[in-house]
Image 1 (cartoon, rainbow, N blue to C red):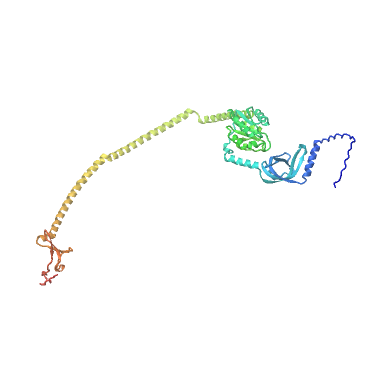
Image 2: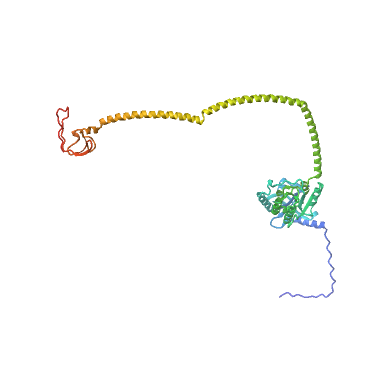
Length: 480
């Protein structure tokens, strides 16, 4: 069975509760010590932290201060490396944009109420995203020639107006004006711009565009004071770099301190370590120029006096060597007369020789004149023609006589003459002459040539006849 409970009621009046006491407030030092103790208790051993370095700056004390930023989340922590732990390698590794791995202990620094990491060792962990992006942009702009040395323009010696693109409330404009007025006065035109934070890029580009529209502006100074890497990011933006490179007048970059380097420094025509140095670069020192002019004038006067003195001495020396100019002129005139006489004699002799040569050439020319040559050649042709005619006639007569004699001998030996006396020539079908009875046989066809005809005949019978000196022998008759 369930346990039974008894109910009791107390109707005795009670005293009202006393109000709670107010807690004693902590002092700031006590709160800082409490936080520091909690942090030290939570991190008794050293931890390794990895991130991207931002705002690295060495201190005069030898300590190294910078921030360590998380690339994936919006988180960062301050880092300090004491002088005893700073090594050359650590200085090389801990630069803006580098990704490092640090060993240290988180601690709370009471004087500033700031949580920081006291590091004693660093290792390289690659390049940070910011540094890689800057390197890629730098390589891209360099490939386009925006950083080429040949694009750099010389600063004007006597600028009419100096344009300054910077914050109107910063120290840059005051430093520039102070140095410019100290060096002799110059007209400064401020183009106000936001130099950090959201909208800084558009503000700087707009200020550069506005200051260029003033025709009297001969040079522009773009600058701002020092700061962390995040504070100077606007001057690493591509739009700002291109605006500086496209400026119609020379641009001097005075961004940050001497150790700070931005892409605007590469695109500008000149770089200054500080805004004051930029003012000294673009504004000529009137006092120094006046002193230089005074010294130059003094040196010029001394040089002119020395030159006049030297020329006087040289003139005196030359005058003594020259003597009376009339005697010198007379001597030269006498020499001129002698040379004139020799020249006339030489001219006469030369003229005579050339006249003789001309006469010889004219004689040769007359002999070789075309009319004379033609006359001589015609006479020679006539003589040769007569010789040719006489030689031709004599030869023709001799050859005619030889032909007549040969004709007589040929006619005497001609078979036609024999045939004319009653003889005939018999030939066989093959064209061979019939000389003996053995050359034909009965039935052969023969051709008989008489004086005025050719006779086709057939051999009926061949009878031998006695030739003189044969002793009366006869050839047998041949029959077919």
